[in-house]
Length: 160
Image (tube, rainbow, N blue to C red):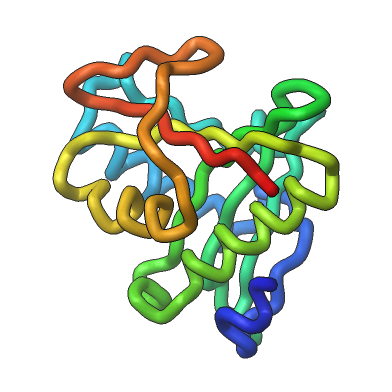
């Protein structure tokens, strides 16, 4: 459970239109565009993160936004992780691990048996891919509308 990973964090469903969340999403999208061609940036804007079939979470340490992440339902048994990101002040402090664990726990509770995600291949994405790998994710064939290439890859995890 995410609280064991970082007991100072509170993770809850929130709306992605809060100013601190919008600022983190903006920074996230700017970084994606800095290291990937626009056609390879698959991060969702706040309006889509608030859409049907997507549950958006925020991790907070007190009043500080520590991390964000969303779970998008693909079908009855599959979910996708979207827009997972730790705030700059919380990087390397367990916020990303706590959020990932929370998203996986939520997927299991919803009956999902598979979770996928898309991430970049540029070295700036290595901390994320290492985190995903530490939880059992492995590179997989592209799913949904994604394409695996020099800029992006898909990863997946069979849930138990």
